[in-house]
Figure 1 (cartoon, rainbow, N blue to C red):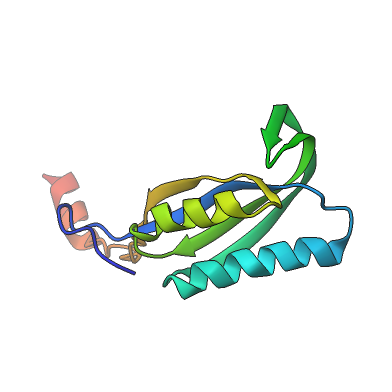
Figure 2: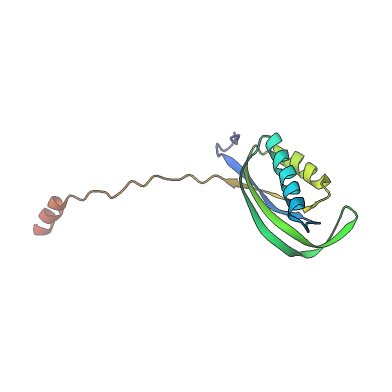
Length: 132
């Protein structure tokens, strides 16, 4: 994963709402996902999570690859990779006849802060302050 040199913030990409068509059988769905994940990994991405959002009606009719689509399977793929892969992957996914829509979203990686624990209280000082 690369660092953004202007801000110094590590970024990861999220492939958002990858929508497939012609997914009547699970082996076909698995083949499309495998092709997509392999293409991402060839370009230097590390896939962290794959989430199936199920089959749904599309918000509007989409004409893609000389076909009209009304339903599609939605998937989210969380990945870490250089931002430079976005344009090549958009082109690659645009040529895949099983993919209707695709999109990438850039998220900054949230830093996890360690818990400092309970700060010890000096009760002696508190009692002396209350007496005065």
